[in-house]
Image 1 (cartoon, rainbow, N blue to C red):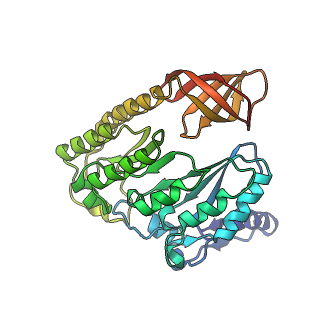
Image 2: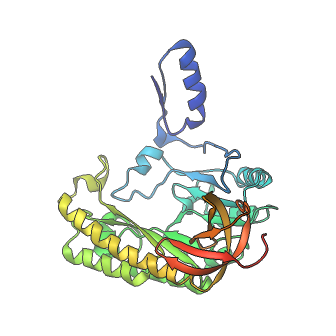
Amino acid sequence: DVVVGCSAKNEIVDLVEKYALDHEKKISVCDILSAENFEPMHVRRGDHTRAQIKVEDGCCNFCSYCIIPYARGPVRSKSIEDAYEEALTLAANGYREIVITGIHLDSFGVDRGGCELISLLRRIDSVSGLDRIRLGSLEPVFITDDNLDGLIGISKLCPQFHLSLQSGSADTLRRMNRHYTPREYAEAVSKLRAAYPDCAVTTDVIVGFPGESDEEFEESLDFVRSMSFAKTHVFPFSARRGTAAFSMSGQIPPYVKKLRAAQMSQTAARGEAEFYESMLGRTVDVLFESSEDGVFYGHSANYAKVAVNSEADIRNKILPIYIYKAEAGLCYGRAAGQAK
């Protein structure tokens, strides 16, 4: 009855309400590949303590497995001032943490002549009442010395970085049309960990990509094991019609992809367990977000999930918490001082 494309999401409610009155079918879909303007969508106050600001849409990388450039169109960026004004509003409404997101966050501003992500972060860093800024997914090629110097200067930036890997095999990465090698990826992570010793690095990995031999999979598995990621999202390859990978030779049978996903997930779980074990005995600031039966849950700056018993309501408060127990996916702590 009502069909809405990626460039008309703000119209959804109005179009549905109009249809409820006149029952006239409506298609509001443009040629997304010719889209030029970022569609602003603003978050209003909800029950959460963390809000997302989407600052970029579209992608021009054309990874061979990905349909996003065709579905979302070219890069379009929100203006820095619009993002700043949205951050001001969110902070004024009680949000303590903002997550900066985009389809391809590294490309923020390239439609205006160059990457402006560091400039955006500096602007939002000045928002009074805001305690934390967290970044969405980044590409490893973004972690240059200059960009890292810029990130270090953002006082409210959380030391948690999601760097998309997709494969630890150089040959697989080439077929994926990813523009880095495992060695370059490892160098980016090394730079981050040198600059932020307590940071968490998380990632995505695809297994069973067309042509992935047993040797390539073992290379990817060994690489993930060596990187000690705080969390690894594992995906068996899923062919998307219209992408280069859809018609590639060497498609992997589903049962092989399932086995490889299970192996990779086991390796990922060990990395996550090691990350949580590293939190033992530390005191970290935790922003509490939810509660259940007197147990309050929140996240540290490096995004470790923490549980604390409390008789008082500590939601939307930041407390120093001593971690006395840790298991994969959850730390247990007790208050170590006054709320912020």
